[in-house]
Image (cartoon, rainbow, N blue to C red):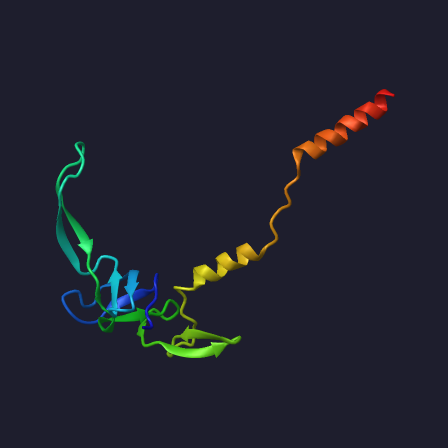
Length: 141
């Protein structure tokens, strides 16, 4: 499945053909994606607490991954995904303009880089107090 979380996609078939939106959930096992603002279903929700009100909620239902195409951010066109090795990593590439397609792992890589930085050393407050007390004792003598 070439579509990942936070990708911008274009719906190419069905009732919502021509609409674009951001992928908010993927299910590789079932081969479906949930796109923001596409395939809206109404669901009755019963009030569960005393201060809640029953309502009819509108939710996005998943659609088949074969009904969407990824939109390239650089050329702003719906494209098929091409895979290539860049710096030893398998990267999704736009075949029309050659730009790398982000999404999915882009946020995870930056989080790992943040964790890789050395954590700040904690200083013990007691040790500082002990040093200051001994320094004041020496001055008093």
